Image 1 (cartoon, helix red, strand yellow):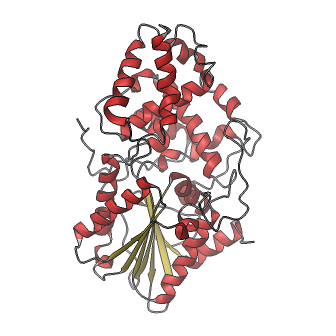
Image 2 (spheres, helix red, strand yellow):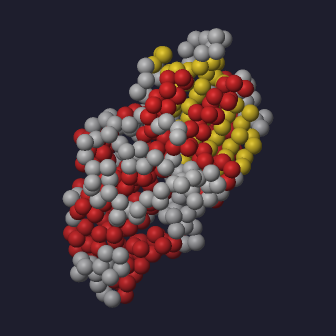
Image 3 (tube, helix red, strand yellow):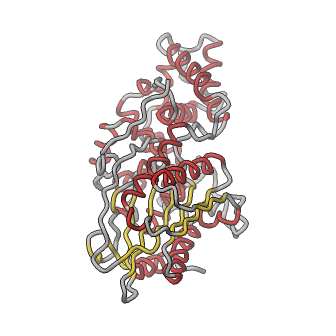
Length: 426
């Protein structure tokens, strides 16, 4: 049975977390699903946005959406946790309690996930279909001008299907809309610059594996995990000998792989849950580890691999304003680029650099890029040619480190100057 999809007027509740370590911690404890980080299922909410100041008219809507809810990326991800549990079951190495874990996890895989790794789930389709309708309703006057709409996705099926669902949602609101859709390597520089398939990718330094890299403060992932998660205690509840996973990928890696399986379940059409496996404290600690990994992959202090997406966004905006005709650009990609964009422009404090790795989760939290995370820049112009914009993130106006014109509206030239000063083009 498919779990009922959460639809409701929850604006400002689901994702707007105050910038403090305590409030982020409270948010994760209050909603354990948030401990899934980028696996978090974003409720589709009624958009709560601000109209442009008097005299300004929308000219360009520049969108970036993460693909919707998906299954785990590949069969290897399932095998890393289920394979160890299977081996333990076969060798009678599981505790009596966690025979239940094996039975539930294996049944879940057979019922829900087999042959679907990496695919968009039905919940992911519905997310983008409904998000498109919310964006249309929030910008109804602009869409009635019949803007030229182009959509681009990576060549990965879950991104293509997300794009199709979104475009169908728009056409449901207005069947007369004309939308061009493409999934081409040509667009990768603006959708997923670090992709190996990107023909414009130039000399991107291949980053070390997760367990080998060190963050800007010299911390390694292993020591970050060990300071937070008692993975031996978790393994001890599951296996008669907590060292049972050691010959596979190690006990530490098994626990983080199991985390992926457990928290990805919310993204799939199932009534089953394994959330009971971890205590509230363990959920938070495991989330901190997951959040740290994504900070390393997306935040500019650790990486700048997705800068071309930001530069393309600026150039596209300038071209659209110069053309003088209403236009919409839709892009469907990944959480890494989404989080990098928020970090690079400083949306809602995501540009704050902590003094150590321990401070990351106080202001930078990866459940800001849940499944189907969506942002868009809306550019408006007045008769004098002055261009202003606002950034909408997951249905709410974002704040930026710029002087506001009015409410959440800022000058486009100020954003360009901020980006140029932080990330000058070589």
